[in-house]
Amino acid sequence: MKKFLSWILFLTLLLCNTPICLGEGEESNESNGSVIVIEESSEENQQITEEIFEESEPYYPDNIERIIGPDDRIRVKDPYVYPYSAIAYMDVHASCGCSWSCTGFMVNKDRLLTAAHCLVCTDHGQWADKISFYFGWRGRGYSYKYAGKWTAWVGNTYRNGTTDFAYDWGCVRLASNVGETTGWFGTRWSMSDSKYTSTWVYVAGYRGADLTYDQGYIDYVTDDNIYYQMDQISGNSGGPIFDWEYYAVGIINGANLRDNVVTTHVGHRLTSKIKQHLDDLSF
Image 1 (tube, rainbow, N blue to C red):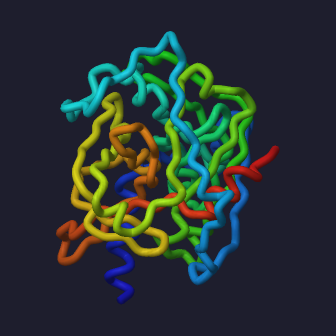
Image 2 (image 1 turned 135 degrees about the vertical axis):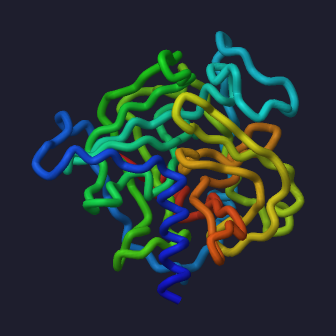
């Protein structure tokens, strides 16, 4: 069992670009944010009220082009076009001096979702304290950058030193209305299990200078997680799982391994607990 959990951990961390460690005592620049860990139980009641059922609609500014209908490209050539303009390349730093990259996506004018493990240094167990968010990232250029103040609430994914996908979510509030420039994804909080497995979805995230995606059906779901075969690679963690109408339905987490072979990729559903923290998040 311990061996199996270690492989899950390995694959989870693999989907977040490997931290570059500067060494003990070499701290990153001044902090521009903080992480608050939410202690929770995976057995808590996941019933969603009528109020929480309410969906948030997608938004794109008039000056941003958008994809019309399904997109048949695997490598996104124009990451500044909506809905890709609402996906962030995250350059993350921790107080231990380590840095890494990950993905996040806007779901409101000042709120972003990502994976909890995108916000922690896996070598030293230090939470992120500085993040730059790049939108329309193309390696040497970008359409918009946010490096201001932020605060995040995360599931307690690293409790007891192990990863549990049930907790691997993070809500980030930015101190600026970034979404009014980048656009944002709608959110569906009310999808049933059968709706999840019958909806064609996309998974998208950054790997270095490239924003890539894959598409297909979800295989099965649990109370917290989504399991599917669509491809995802290192750096994609924290990216959106969304439908063709640009409503997010989940967050990319990682993958399960058996005998060194990926058996399924894993995402986190948009659950009532995430919506509660997303709505309540404050500085």
